[in-house]
Length: 256
Image 1 (cartoon, one colour):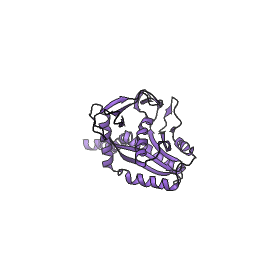
Image 2: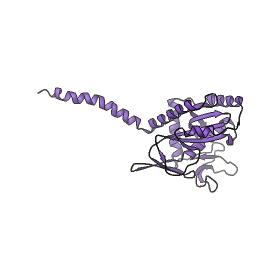
Image 3: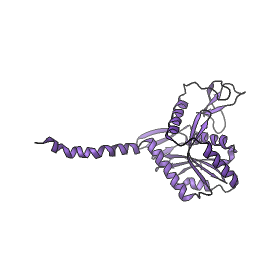
């Protein structure tokens, strides 16, 4: 009996099953889900936002005092600057504006993730510094794609699917003229880091370093040590941040 002939169909099936299994695993990875979510937002924007009225930039990495920050989407218009953070998630979502972490429940499993509003706040501050615009003209927008369901009340700027389109279009009062929009677009195109794999890797390393609460940090302005502090009052009460030990002479702050 030729064992090879008996095993040949099994071996041939493995030849196809292994690549398919690897592909399925890749598509389920956080990186792939993020890329798919951002692609969906691009398609929604192309279909529903006039490209002359809303200038679009995607995957914008900017330098910050503590490394880099990566912004999923920026829409520049006469009506303001809209900074969009994408979340490709399914299941039930629980969270409020003031909570540091939100919760995803998927079947019987529970996952914690950073409050996307706080995550996007750093993006707004980076754009404010880069463009030199008033914060009142910068608008944070969060959109969830992937079929998730909110189980708690969320702010109007936290949307699902194409809901971000309605939110952006709700701003109808002009804040800039066309020349100013063109100038801001040029400033971002020249000031952003090149969207390369090397830039992404560096940004990931910066994220790991910033998440290490044991790592020593120095103030980028005066060189004094940075300390973990907590906001005591106001809409961001309870949020932790890195603050300069030279306060009040130096008021440098970095978001955790």
